[in-house]
Length: 164
Image (cartoon, rainbow, N blue to C red; front, top):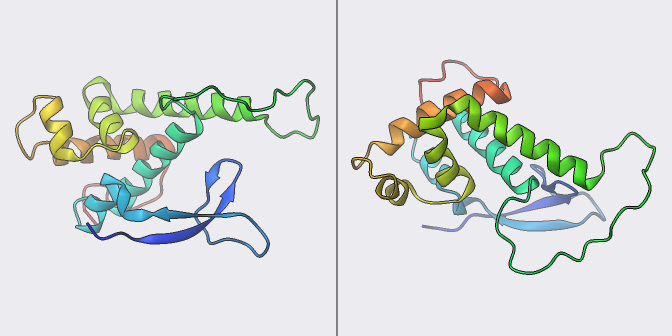
């Protein structure tokens, strides 16, 4: 697959959706890396489904649930900031709560494929094989799961059943 590199502003929550601001930090992101992007680019997912899947993946990354290889050496906050902002730990817990709520909204039979494709970055053929599903059934099931997650995240859009 061809790579699509885009420069994004680096925020406290991760890469933003817009380009870098003058003097701000930025990161280069490969948009073609996500299986959701691949499906969306080929018309298999609607804009609403794609946005819901990206929101789910963003919450997965903010919750820092991916396995770590080394110890974290982040500084520990001793006193509260008092400015009304969430601490990094509180942001992490809020993202975990949103992720858990979205997966619960998808339902027990659909959360597996959502996690594998949107969060873990598995391709649909690998997810279908791991879940012992028939070939090409994952696209339909993933679409249903993303429709439910879009409802949870209140993603605006028209008819959720019509791709792009």
